[in-house]
Length: 196
Image (tube, rainbow, N blue to C red; front, side, top):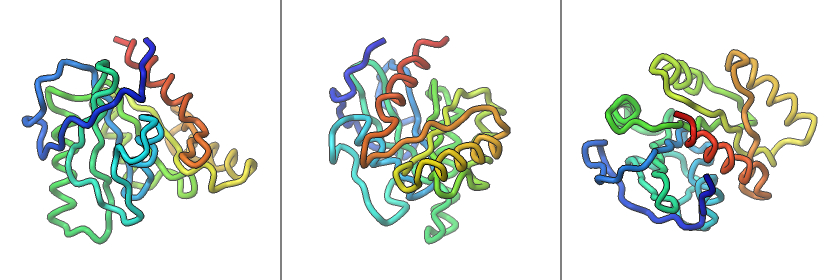
């Protein structure tokens, strides 16, 4: 399956998966802690700077943002979790929104679990992974901001991240500054969409 990622269009933002448009396409969800670089990585994947709004301040994504890619798949940008400055009510609402989507009828075929390579998986990342495993959802760990570490430190951190996640999968290191791992991530997503 060859996808033209640059042929991406924003569909809509929804507050709940019952508002999803009637689009019968496989879905890929993008999840991660607030300020992990989800929006920047999506812009790199789409090859379209500014397609997804970015911000230095965490907690900007508050809804499910839907993007149709090449008429072949729907990418769902989930709200970041763990944003400390958000009210407890907002945090609970975002968690409910994410969990409802991931366990609903429109659930994704693949979840990209983004983690900042400098910090490794946080408790909330490990909880997400456990939650995904319990529900039988396929997921792929992605280490963002790989350009922030040197080669040896990066390799060491990737080993630590793999171990922290139970040695199941090694995270793919990515960087939006030098596009490291972006083409590999595209290929992995395309390959996963072929799996039944």
